Amino acid sequence: MESSGRPAPRVLFVEDEESISEPFTRSLVKAGFEPVNARTATAALDLFERLSPDFVLLDLSLPDGDGRDVCVEIRRRSDVPILMLTASGTETDRVVGLELGADDYVVKPFSAREVISRIRAILRRSATVAPNIGAGPIEIKDLTLDVPGRKAKLYGTEINLSRKEFDLLAELVRHAGEVVKREDLMADVWDVNWFGSTKTLDVHIRALRKKLGDSATDSHYIHTVRGVGFRFALPEVADRKP
Image 1 (cartoon, rainbow, N blue to C red):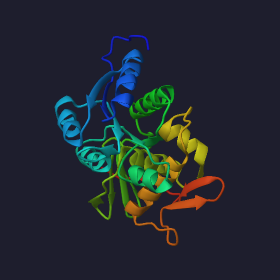
Image 2: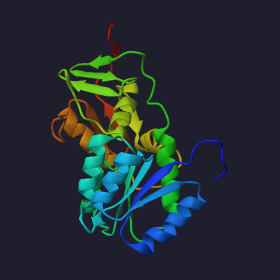
Image 3: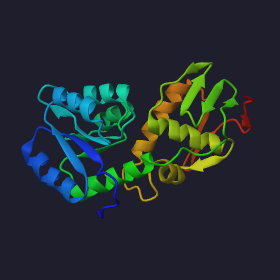
Image 4: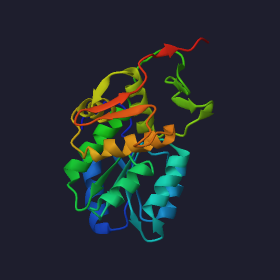
């Protein structure tokens, strides 16, 4: 990675196995990142609070706790991108991590090149602005979306959305009434060259539906178009008057 005059992105790498942390830390440095290492959940939260990293690479299995709990606590404090590392290839473990607020997951053993590519892709998407659908808040039935302020309210109460959930909602609202293809959502919300699992999209859609009060049998907002993608159900999007 060539120097651009900007500070190197700081990556908090939470991993207690030296056989993994040491070689991958060297790979991060070589790729132009500034790694900060933590081997315990306690150290991870302390370093996160003190150093405000740009990215968190988080192992699920830690000697003094569960990486899932660390993810929840970090997400409570910040919208920083989180990539989870798991030794389990089971769908349940991966889905739980995503539902807790992780941006994606990688199953061990992993390729340093692949993980660094994912970090770059996630950071690249994090730096973009949410879809431009108007300068002020918009209202669709009981939903109010403030894109510049990155806030959403349902029945007047703010919904606690992760960064990816908000970006998905904004993208679907921008195309309200239209079918948005799965691959377009992955490209627009994650990255045009994304090569991670599309299960990431499904989990975030499911979490977003839950927060909007939708269900598989009674969906007011997000409809699935099988084999194609998703549609935000209401076609009329009107800017709310200041």
